[in-house]
Length: 380
Ligand SMILES: Cc1ncc(COP(=O)(O)O)c(C=O)c1O
Image (tube, rainbow, N blue to C red; front, side):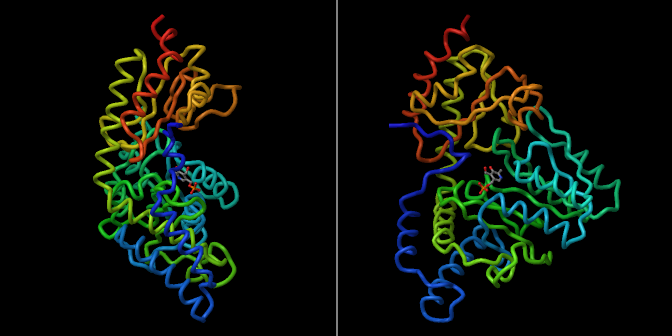
């Protein structure tokens, strides 16, 4: 049996979600735009799902739009802000997901948007004092785009604190919440957040389906031109099966949030302690003293010939994780996140990310497999 510890990349579908999707796939074949019974049935499935998502984050149903996933939703937030809300300046960070960073590059190049990236420290914490300073020093209409949790190291922002700062300075606020929807309570009714985004495959739903929350004070125009689907915002016949699967997975995650959080946090602590005991020289990336996602453990192994093949060795041993190292000049493109944190390029980083489907026995097995791969070099 393989051990899957790459749950920040994607998560396995839950049986409950598969069952729901099978049901919709089999029974709900109408086009939601059709007026007949089959169409109305499909429409009802979508609107029921929209209500589930809206309730989960404290939004109203008119503020939720289904998309193809996190990438599209983040593109939409950034590009619609510039096109429709008069945003001339975007403040973000160098450790955002590529779908944000590459969108920012395009906006800078094609739309002349001023892009400023906040300094981050070695824990991945963005400097909120600098954010305040930058917001105070310009009258340009500004959007702040900061991810709720970093996908590589798990460092989180205090989303309420950032929302408050943005509100004080009359700036729009977009948070890429792709790693936190379904894992942390998010309540947009409490804080002034302009856009948040979600992706079903990060919380045990299907791939290729996500959503964007757009605060209803922000009037933005269609992102995909076509039919009048998604209240004109995104043309194209809806992915009904995906939407139903997303809603089922989200509801399941919210219903089990505390139990899963405790279980996964315990697993992470257990793994950390074992790694520290067994392998001297390992370090942990992220913000353990501050806010850090409980599902992500980014481990930095000291340089050694074997460590450089660590990810491959783990895969051969039946363990799936993600790897990365900081970019060194001339070498193949490494992790932009680790590079921004000034991690030495010769250290080997492995991101282990957990779900409630993992258990301690699996962690013990990973330690067993790591021992022969690593011990000699680290002890010498
Ligand atoms: C933080 C973050 N944002 C955005 C995305 C993109 O989401 P999707 O795969 O749904 O396009 C990911 C997925 O890797 C992510 O981790």
